[in-house]
Length: 134
Image (cartoon, rainbow, N blue to C red; front, top):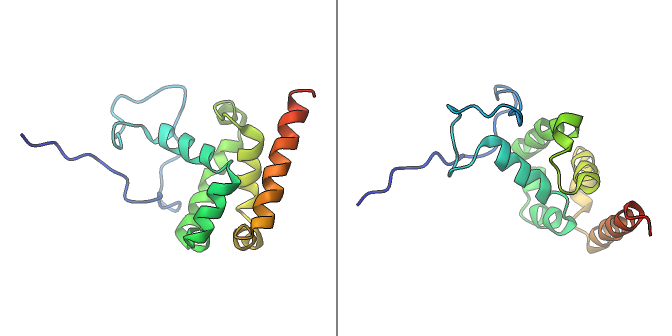
């Protein structure tokens, strides 16, 4: 019994030639699936993970944040700041903040520091409490 090959993504899309952001409103039945998921679902999961300072630190420790392809991919992901997409984010504040910070080369280097990660975590807790009105 042979499994059919899946269309796994080979890496971030080339922002010079990548298609426009996926539409969350009208799923295209002919859209290529990656491991059974749409590009919208995969990109939503990834930007959600960026809301975690520990994940950002992990990416920095792997030197991914310095890779030109990653920097270009994060620039492409800025579409998540638009109202029609932001509504799908579980943690919109920290996610949008991470997308903004990742545009800065200095932050991409400094997030290796445990102090920076700790500060981001404290800001996240403070923002959450303020949001809940406590």
